[in-house]
Amino acid sequence: MTRSSSGVPAAELAPSPAEPLRLQVLTALALHRMATTGQLRQMLRPDGSRQLLSRVLNTLRSTGFVDLTPVPESNRSRTHAWYLTPEGARLTRDLPVLRGRPPYPITSTTAASLKTPHTLTVVRSHLPFAADARRLGHEHGPWDWTPEVTHPIGEGERLVADAVMHYTVVEGEHRRKLRAFVEVDRSTMSSERLAAKLIEYARLYQYEAQPVGRRRSTTTGPAWLRWYPVFPRVLFILTGASRTRLEHRISDLRAMVAQHLLVAALSREVPLGACVLHDIEERGPSGSVWVPLTGGEPRPWTDL
Image 1: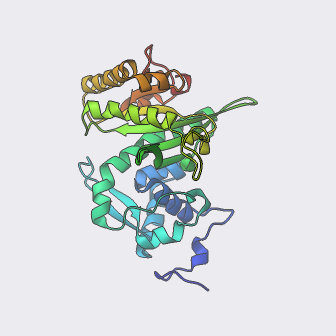
Image 2 (image 1 turned 90 degrees about the vertical axis):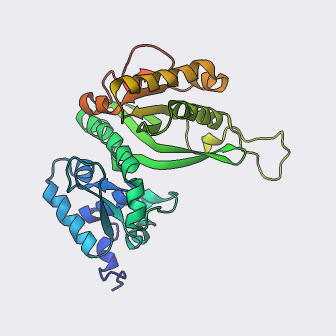
Image 3 (image 1 turned 120 degrees about the vertical axis):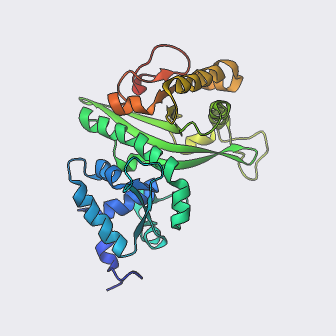
């Protein structure tokens, strides 16, 4: 029987129709990069116990597939974030849900500690959507949220979205498929730099790749059509500052929509919204907590 270098039979961790929890944990860490035990429980076993996830994680750690790093500034000194070791990353790289993903970026405790605050906040932003979907009977799970998605925007530059979300609203026989670029702001950059992210999305919306070997006047249409049937809406989720400061940052996003020609053109075709992370955790993303960046009263993200 083939064994990994850590001594565990490879067949035991290979995908199977039953999808054992240990495989789901490895897949979740490969896709989301990092998560706490509590976040993995909410993601994979919302009705299960924390002890169940802890047992699986400790077993995977003892066999060399995962490791952990302390969560900085945590109110609970024993909170840790789990991530894949290089061995775990190699084990999961060929899973179907990970096809097309960039190489796994965390290879040591030091690298993990540098990425912990932002990565965990992105996972934290995903969980309210998953909880909302379960409550409402919609379709959105752990594999419908892909972090760190990169697209070219021309002139050798690339846009990196914090996440791309796929979400299906189910209303009787009607199914409405929605997609969103998600930007998670922890108030660590200036408000101006945050608002400038809208310019990058406007450039992506207009960018047309030049086919190799053809005349410059010939294009194949917007490059984003390679990945999306319609351009995803753009959602900003803000945290890390006082309510007043977060509202000011949202106002600056709205000002960018009003003042920048490319962003204004984007806003006429693509829904743009912003909210405070605490609000979607307390009231759910389907609550009237999203501020339309084109103006108007707060509403659910699906109604932007």
